Image (tube, rainbow, N blue to C red; front, side):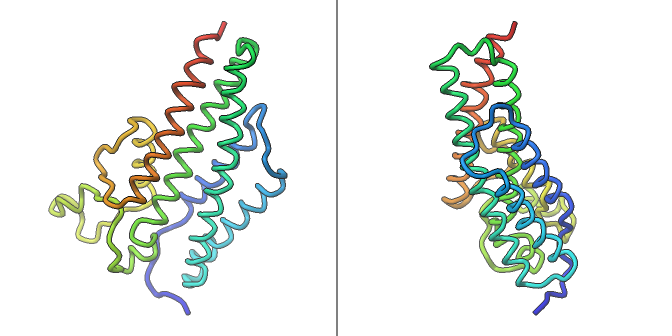
Amino acid sequence: MSTNVRDEPRWIPALAILAVFGLLAVLPHHVHVMPVWISYVVVLVVLVPMAAVTLTGSTFWVKAERIAIMLLAAVYAANTAAELADMIGIITIHPPETRAVSLLSSSLAIWVTNVLTFSLLYWQIDRGGPSARISNASTKPDWLFPQATAPELAPPDWRPLFLDYLFLGFNTATAFSPTDVLPLTRRAKSLMMVESTISLLTLVIVAARAINVLP
């Protein structure tokens, strides 16, 4: 069964996914909690459904895309936990002076990956995902965008796209709090707290320490 509704283009979130795994691949002194080849498999598992949604609009591939994004988040969480533990261990146990540049580049990569991954999650779970939003599904929103409270300032057919959720993810990781988009559900608040916590650990503990010991 296929949907006849013109869905949101997937090329921007696809680029975000490639950026996530590109950054994970180049992290210096990266701690691998699973074989490297699993990362490449996850990339294919995520990108294939997204391409299929674009080409066919099949509801099967829409569901597969949603599951694949959750798989991506799980892989990211495992890699991030291992990398942060490794870097905090370097700071607390070993002298960080000899690895300041490595710590700084790693923290930057983790921060960017954090923003991109949570943006993908927000994009997928809000009101059932992009395909459900385009079909005006009755699912209640997880986030309240300003265009919903002031519809006279937005186009009549406005709906949040991936770039809107990327902006939400960037603000959450930078300001450690909501800005113009308000979380409405407990799962939205929980995800934003996790993203802010990762960002806080990365910037305040790791990046700040690395900057302090740079020659």
